[in-house]
Image 1: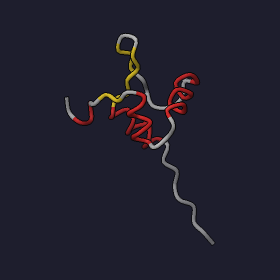
Image 2: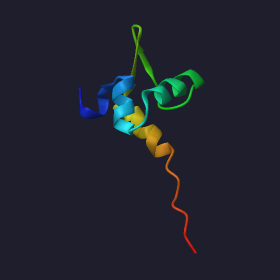
Image 3: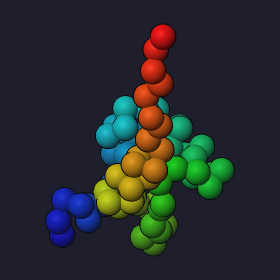
Image 4: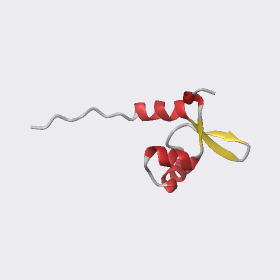
Length: 65
């Protein structure tokens, strides 16, 4: 398994993004956030999917006057 293929737990994802764990669960309940994988009863997030999701949410910087 390469670093890109690494699977994050919801807690690891929250730590990686610097957000509350409850936000990760809210995203999942609303069908938002990075793509998820079910491994039995457990939810996991591929590092590559997290990075792709982050890249899709990049907003250009706005010029200041």
